[in-house]
Amino acid sequence: MRAAALYSAAGSLLLTTLAAAPAAGTPGGPGDAEARGTAVAAERAAAAGVEFGSCPEAEELPGGMRCGTVAVPLDYARPDGKRIRLTVSRVRATHKDPDNSKREVPGQGALLYNPGGPGASGLYFPLVGMVPQWKRIAAAYDLVGYAPRGVAPSAPLSCQDPGEFFKGPRPAPTRPSDAYKKERAAEAEEYARDCAERHGDALRHYHSLNNARDLEVVRAALGEKRLTFMGASYGTYLGALYAEMFPSRVRRMVFDSVVNPDPEQVWYRNNLDQSAAFEDRWTDFKEWTAEHDAVYGLGTTPREVQNSYEEASARLAAEPAGGTVGPAQLQGAFLKAGYYDDYWPHRAEALSAYLKGDPQPLVDQAGTRTEEGAVGAENSNAVYTAVECNDASWPTDFEVWDRDNTRLARRAPFETWDNVWTNLPCAYWQAPRQRPLDVRTGPGELPPTLVLAAERDAATPYDGALELRRRLPGSVLVTERDAGTHGIAGGPNACVNGHLEAYLLDGRLPARDTSCAPRPEPEPRPAAEPQAGSPAAPAA
Image (cartoon, rainbow, N blue to C red; front, top):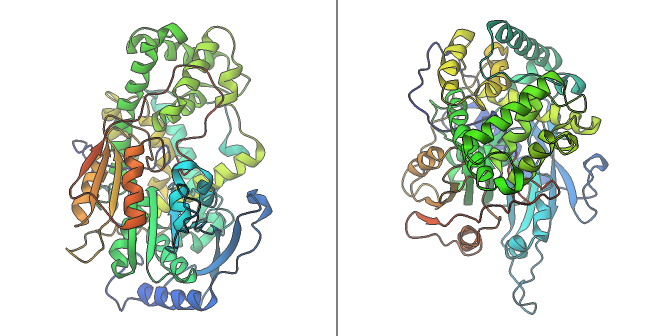
């Protein structure tokens, strides 16, 4: 999930005056309008199937991948009303055993993947079949990705001009003044207003409950009697909702890097907890950098590394690097190091080079995106905002945000206020709010599921995995100890991948919750910019 979307439980912060907005479209019993609409849409999708052909040129997907679309209702209470089309991608199972070329592997249907966000596209997911860690799974499963509703090219949302979304350079005060807070609150209110004006009544239908209903329709369109699903980050929340709403349709489910599904956490408290957890990961990065002072020269202690970072931020405030990189861009670049420790060597090298007089590595890593990249990022942010704001009630009084986050920033300054500015449009949101679903299945109601989590994950703090494990009887938790990379399935940890393969290929889970040793720390040498996490890394 992204740098402000998330999760888990830092419980001591008080949350008051949450707007108790009425629920809209909360699923009820089997006779409610949305349930009937979902059944109608799924029946239609099963009859129509998916006509796979070439993929949209704008997505720049390789020729070997095939794409199609699935029609879903904009409003499930009105399945005969307006429909939108979700783009789906697929690579067929290879049926080739990578360990024995003479052995043909029987197919197990489709494995559908959601990478998180909300606001991320999974269209690239089928490409992981080319990666060694995924070849055994790709032999047995058709790998299927999709762009959720609102994510281009699936009826894309947009709330502002992409050029405005990336305007910079910007400051990043850890103790913002009242004047600065007022300025950012005005921007958040304008953003919420623009979203409403651009999309009107349609905006209310972009939320997690409808995303789960869409998943059911896509399952039917693919001809799958039961769903095999893997969700990462926000995708775990989507999967949890599906498990609660359609338990008899579940075949196997993998939850990788888990959002806390407790209705009291979604989403305001989850974001507070994420900010607290990022402070610990920021410390992990500083400790690693200090251990390799001989390479980077940024300090021999975490405090000295922090001083180097603050020196760079102060210089950038006075004179932005390349005219585009200010303190906020610096913070955003280093936030990625909190998601993926593969970034640690590259961020440390860029900071070191900047302080020694060479700003180019920092500009390359933190500078303004291309116009095309800005369009995609603005779309992703619009979907993220719409889904989270629609999903639950949020404080509507900025004084609540100010009080809670001022308190939190005293001990967790690195991410707290950036997280506030990302989510603050929800204080002024004009669409009706949903009531978060209480995910809780009974014993035997759901097939066994696999939960994966890194112990020091900041984007989705570990408490979320423990909470989901409690709410889904029969699930088993595999923990990557003393590690914090966000999204651990299919990465470099052979122990984690062994459990993933055993479950997806054979339906086998450990007899009880278990753990894996951490992946090796990154090597302290400058290198080209990495791809975030594993090839199927969840969205940030």
